[in-house]
Each structure stands twice: as structure tokens, then as C-alpha cells.
Image 1: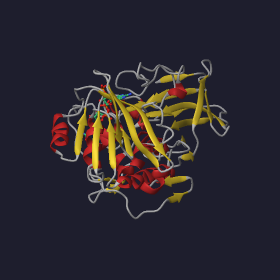
Image 2 (image 1 turned 180 degrees about the horizontal axis):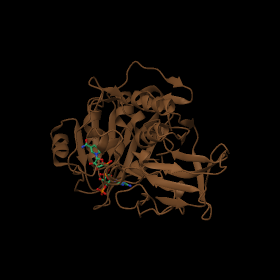
Image 3 (image 1 turned 30 degrees about the vertical axis):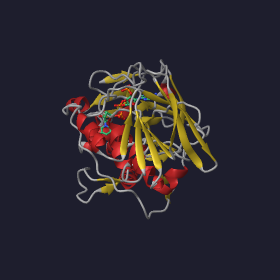
Image 4 (image 1 turned 120 degrees about the horizontal axis):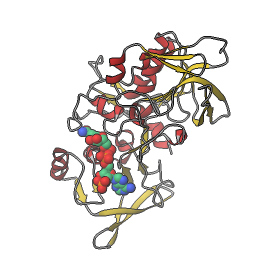
Length: 379
Ligand code: NAP
């Protein structure tokens, strides 16, 4: 048991669960006495699998968690996925947005309240233990316990033209946008599993796919590299960096690349530029409140979800640089287990995807079920 401030006690019901399964935050039961009706028991920041799993467990445990779900892209990275074939309980597969919509409804069924906004700052009162959470639209919430489940976001190249042509050729999600580049030249940037998986997927659509990597060695699994090497549509360019994305009113048209060994520069025609250079944890808003590592991942106490600040917990991709939850664990079929320590990182199962073709945007409240149509317009 941990006592926070004068009244608050956080009790671990199932210690072994906390160790093995960070999303099962039901284990963190907040009990307090006294007149604190103006304070929330618990706020969850983030609406991916870790956030909604925490909300479901806390809701069922009798609390009314407030989920601050995000304004633009609630639902996390699974809303950018089409068909998920390997999520247990869905023998016929399930669309990523539908899965996240189900998680949202399940959390609400057990009493979770959802706010569609972005957290901009958090402060912690060291004396009372109360945390103050400010959101973009100006609302301010107070809470005894805070759970950070903000996941990660696509890493950007930060080169000229990237922002300008984002959504007009530049994309971070092949399964979302590949369909729009049928018979067009495509470039994929990166040398990891994501880049090779995306190149393979995009070769179904593009007239050609050129994978550009800054080194001559790849992080990607050998099997993915070999598959790309044997694919007649894929050309691999190594030791090269993309320096600029060029285009016109019709969108991106080409990229300028530079060989980092010879210094030679060249221009490659490309209408689709897919950036697949990894993810960064979405934790900037919590800087200075909890300890983060050099990569920005929130540091937790051993295998628990406890951060360096009492009453603040973290789970999912924002914690774990080794086992990305909405990727690895989902691929391994471990719903609600953002950390899957029993599985070696080298074991990955590719996910089969089918692009949305005939769906239109569907709004449920402020929860947008993204389709390829809406994603193409996203910045
Ligand atoms: P990753 O393994 O971190 O690879 C990122 C790649 O991008 C690296 O090759 C890196 O180059 C390059 N890169 C990083 N910053 C760059 C920059 N500013 N400019 C140019 N290149 C840059 O990330 P990931 O490929 O997204 O994979 C993340 C995790 O998901 C991994 O554990 C992976 O195994 C897993 N995953 C698995 C599958 C599957 O189906 N098996 C699919 C996707 C992802 P350097 O190598 O030079 O650092």
C-alpha cells in the first residue's frame, strides 16, 4: 500500500499482475476518504489499447476514469490499420478502427468518461499529491492518480518539403495510403522492419518502389530484406539520405537524395514518399514531471507501471521501446498486454492487411473512424 498525501491510498490488488501486465491497471486501486468530490480518482491520457484497457479495468473496479483521448487521432495507431487478423476473439479478423471503437464503447459501458482533447501540460503538487492536467481547449482537470498511455508517434525526417507535401504524397502509413499510388513511383525511407514491410506492401500498388536507407546494413529481419531483394518492383538504395521533397500543386513529384559516402546527389521521381524510420514516444507534455530516458520513453520501476512520481503511472508504447504494444503485442495476439516480456523481440508475425476500398468517413460523436479517404487528407 502506498499513502499519498493525507487521504489517498493506492493499493496493489494483484502484485503479480502488475509485474507481468502493465495495462491491467485494475491492480492500481485508488481509495480515498474525505470530501474530494472536486477531484477525479484517476485520469488516463491516451486512447490506444493501453489507455482503454486501463479504463475498462478501472471502470469495472468501481471508479469513473476520465480518458483524455486526443483531439485529432484518438484510438492510437490501430486506427491506421486495416484488417487485423490475429487479434484473439475475432476469427474472421477485425478492422483496426472497429476494434478501437469497440474498446471505446467497452470502456464507456463501465463508466469511463471520454474527453476528445489533447493534454498540453501536467503539474504535480508534491504536498497533496494532486495532479493538475490542462488540455488544449483550456479545460483543467485535477486527479489523484494519472495514467500515461500516450503511445508513440511517427518519427519525421524533418527535411524541406516533408510538412508541405504531407497528405499530398508524403505518408507515414502504407496500409492507409498505398492505394492512392496505384501505378505511381513510390519511395520508402528507412532500413527497419517497417520500411521493408511497407515496401513489400506498396509493391502491390506502385509502378516501382525505391527503398532508401542511410546505411548499407539493415535493422530489418533477413527474411524481409531477402523478400525485397527478390521483388522485381523494389530497388534498394543504400548509404543515401533524402534531403528534400519536391512537388507542385498536384502533390509530391520527386526527391533529392545524397550518397553519404561519395557525396553524389541525384533526383528520383516519386509521387508517394513513405517515411518508415521508427517512432518516438509521445511524452513531451510530461517532461520534468516524470523521469524519461534519452529516447523520451517514460521510465518505470522495474516491470511495474510506477513512474518516478508517486501517483503517476505509465503503460504501453510510451514506456516500452523494445516491445511496441500496438505493433508487437498485437501481432502476437496479446490484447491489453502492452508489455509482453515472455516473448523474444526477434519473434514477429506479419499482419495481413486489406485496404479499405468502399468505406466512407463514419463519425461517432467526435470519434472519427478513419478510412483511406480521410487519412489521405490528414496532415
Ligand atoms: P526501427 O527498427 O527503429 O528502424 C528505423 C529505421 O529508420 C532504421 O533503419 C534507421 O536507420 C532509420 N532511421 C531512423 N531515423 C532516421 C532518419 N532521421 N533518417 C533516415 N533514416 C532513419 O523502426 P521500425 O522499422 O519502425 O520497427 C520498430 C519495431 O517494430 C521493431 O522492433 C521491428 O522489429 C518491429 N516491426 C516488425 C514488423 C514485422 O512485421 N515483423 C514490421 C514492422 C515493425 P539506422 O538503422 O541507421 O539507425
